[in-house]
Image: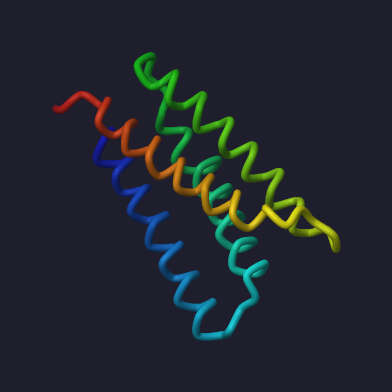
Length: 113
């Protein structure tokens, strides 16, 4: 399981790197970059990463990750509004950083084969 989880994390990180490169090359606005980052993260976690965290020892970390993904969705939705909180961009970056930390913790909790 940890190999598959690591692969999905690496895939997500690669997608974020690709988004950063594209955003820089195409001169995206901060809102566009954060929106893309939030969207990619929500899709990766809901569709591929969280479903791998099903064992009882994953329960606490998975619950915290779910809360962060829910928060990220709310922040992403804020960016769709014409007027959004000025802290949305920073909060998205902080939430993604927290997800990175928690998913690394989840990897460490995985039993070694």
